[in-house]
Length: 83
Image (cartoon, rainbow, N blue to C red; front, side, top):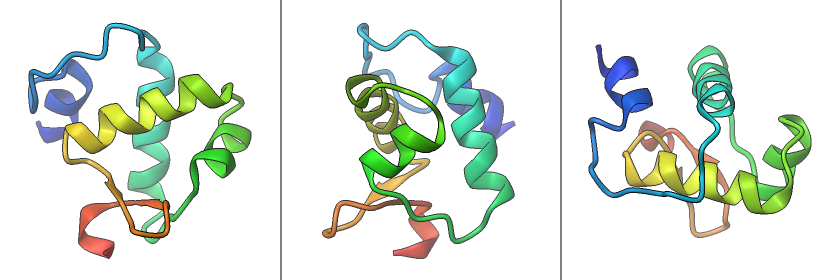
C-alpha cells in the first residue's frame, strides 16, 4: 500500500512538474527496496539508472519529499532507517 501511495504521490502533495518519468521512479524505488543499505550520491545514481544529472536530481528530490529517501550530510541518498 505505501509503495502505491509513494508512486502515485499520495504521501506528499508537493508537486514536481518538471519530473514526469514514472517508470524511472518505479525502478529507483524498486532498487532501494531490493537492496537494503543502498547509499548513492546523485552522480552515482544517474550513472546507475542511465539518467541525466538534472533528471536524477529531480527524481531523488521527489523521493526525499515523499519521505522514501533521506539525503545525508555527505550528500548520499539512503532509506530513512539507515541514517
